[in-house]
Image (cartoon, rainbow, N blue to C red; front, side):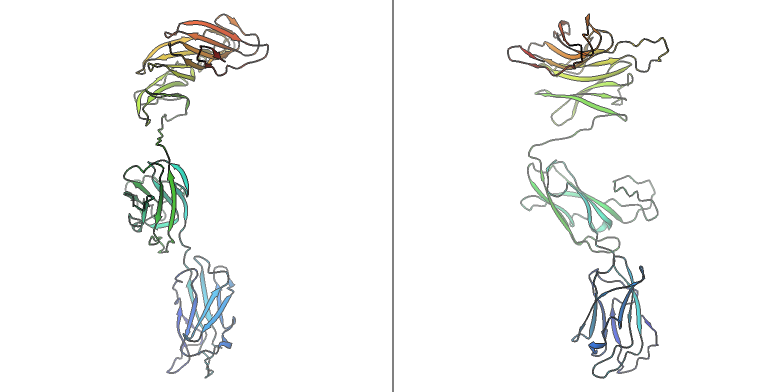
Amino acid sequence: MVNDAGSGNTAGEFKIAAVTPEADAMLEALDSNLEVTFSADVDPKTLTAQSIRVIDLMNHRPVSGKLSYDAALRTAKFVPFDGWMPDGHYKATVQHRVTSSPAGKHLPATFSWEFDAPSPPPQIFHTQPYEEETDVSPKTSIQVLFSDFMDSTTITNATFQLFDSTGFAVSAKVVAPREPAPGMGHDGGHKLSLRAAGEVLQPGSDHAVLTPLAELKLNTKYTAKLANTIRSLKVTSFPGKEWSFTTAAIKSSSVLIGSDQEDEATAVVANGAGVYMLGQTNSALKSDSVSLGGQDLFLTKRDADGKEIWLTQFGSSGFDVGQGLAVDKDGSAYVAGLSDPNYGVPAPVTFAPLAVDGVLYKFSATGQLIKKVQLGATTGFAVAERVIVDDAGNVYVSGSFDQKLAGTVSLGGTDVFLAKYDAELNRVWLETKGTVGSENGGRIALGRDGSFYW
């Protein structure tokens, strides 16, 4: 506090008894009042916008507000019209022209002091699951991203909880990963990350994770709660947060299958024996796999929860594509696609590209490659796009070609074909359709009477 005219306080003198907040202190909250308490009753006519002023020192402008007087407490209160600026710095001044009543004594001097406004209360930037989200996996963890760094010691199982629809608290583990100390380079991306050995950490975190110790119930509404006793590192109070989500009605799971390069899943088939997935990869999928060429194929069988039963990576030294997948009643799998042997081959002026031929593979129920057959393109390209298998084990393949396929010549542009193979992949017949324009190999379906829809 600064007394511009010297204190000169003597017994019985009219003076300022207290100010709130005190000099160099902070307002309790952004909606707190500025208060000046006097030693005697005040003549309210001398309490004006000129006699009690507040300056915003960060923006160098006066603060407009409402001034009131509580005679019982001998306290003048100032409330800014637009509220206090978060993290603002202010200077308040009480002019000596303020007088007591009824004695009419002036303050002995003009008083000035500076104070600060607090930071805004921390808010929630993001939650996962989000509010009122449905079809949430029962294996989910509840994640929260705060707008500020929070005191990790205040985020515990007592302040971050999950309740089921009956109000029962779910047993869970709470983690609030600490962040690097100021100047250590917080990444700003709000991502969970491993910290380098010996790195200095501050006791705060801008995110927290609650992981249930067991799977949640299906088709159940859960409510996550963050208590208002959580504090930021700036010791700013948190208003608390509560939100709900609902788990999926049926159990589901997701599994990542892939390499360190680009991968793609192209077909999936499920039956009583398991789930089969066909895809393409540009690298080795497993530590014991070998990349065979520019792009390989992979076929994997999984159980109902996605756990691997077997996985095989296959193809040529060129560029392979897998598009069709079928599984018979014995668990044998059939893959349809194409193989491009020109990938990576130097192309001098005299180079004549090899045909890009369609291929058909058969795998055993345990994932062993039994047989591979070429469709028979001698020039141009052919691609097997769809494959189905009937109860007798006969295999039907559809696709397209643009020049010559197994002795058949295209009528123009791209024609389509449908071929039948027996269970050992011996071709039974081949039929083509086309016009002088272009057609694409479409879907095929097998009717109950053995008819085809192509």
